[in-house]
Image (cartoon, rainbow, N blue to C red; front, side, top):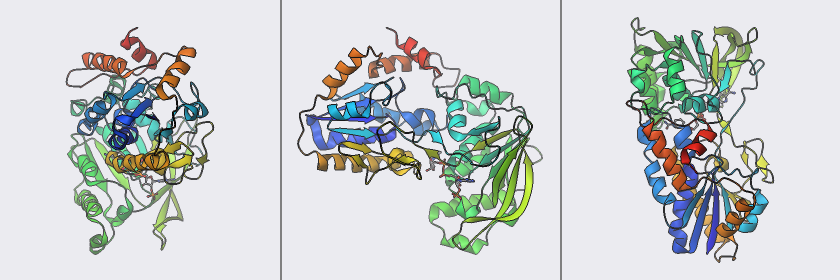
Length: 434
Ligand code: NAP
């Protein structure tokens, strides 16, 4: 029997498990270990609460989790409850599918002022992640600046702008919808250090900004590159840029109280305020011959009481695991970190791609494992893990326990919401019962 441990139960972990099942058939036991009592990683706490159709993929993951040769060990933290060395002793292969849940820092003066939050915190807050449930971002001011021109920036702008009614059918947690309901934000600036041809926003997500009931997108036509240059873009990007052009052509809205303004060619240089953020100092940029942003020396201030940096993520360290500080992920060659130790998904390649990108990534890592371990080494695997956790009197959350928690979340849902998440680990543990 091959024994494989997958650390982290998000998309990358599940696609790796699925691929290992295909390769090894009934000659494999796969154990998921997750530090939270709930599975599904980014699907539960990263994908926007109003994108329920994307979240439906958990049904496929459930089929894997409940299959004969798979177990889920929730509420078990690798690096705390168990060490990597212990897992490498027990398993033929240990796969780190821990994602990239830490924010990259802006790295400018004032970025630690109250009111400046990272997208991991902001997204985790409205998605009810236990690490961020208490964030309580300031929503009483009128100005918010979102830094970055990726899909996370669009998610945050949309969530800040929706009405309560527009959240119907979403699983946004009650603490967030209540706070957003009383928000005074009327001007959201999406700051891009480069231009419309360099955005990392996809058409579907960009188009959503055009259908908001109380917010209208705004683009300065002067920021648009010549239309003839759009022909050089790949089709997806061309569609996105078409939308930016449409927004530039829109007359200013005098009926919608919130403006979502795209401020291109603008990079943040400092955050200022008396005890909390009050303004962002921004430097106008231009593109150099490598299409990178360079400052022009011209600066201006944007008043804001909330700043959300959506500029990418980093994978957290795990003691004993080599790390690439520059890239913010585990040091690896084709997913191999050390003999028997692998990484997959964002922990391997950084925070890029869609949920679906993890599917070929999982298959690739399963192939590496099969190549490195053609013959099972007779390791203890699951029996050894059970013994270790029992000796440590650790309260493991099984997949059946999670299903009980799931039922409880569905039962306490607000009207027109699929679930009301528990936002504290203790409440999840209590909901599973003894
Ligand atoms: P992203 O797509 O990598 O975008 C990051 C943005 O931050 C870029 O515009 C980048 O600009 C900018 N940036 C980086 N450092 C900066 C700095 N110091 N100052 C100013 N701007 C800076 O990252 P993301 O939005 O966090 O998304 C992560 C991944 O999740 C992406 O693959 C994304 O597509 C995916 N995602 C998908 C969905 C969806 O499909 N619905 C939703 C959310 C996220 P430069 O280009 O100039 O570096």
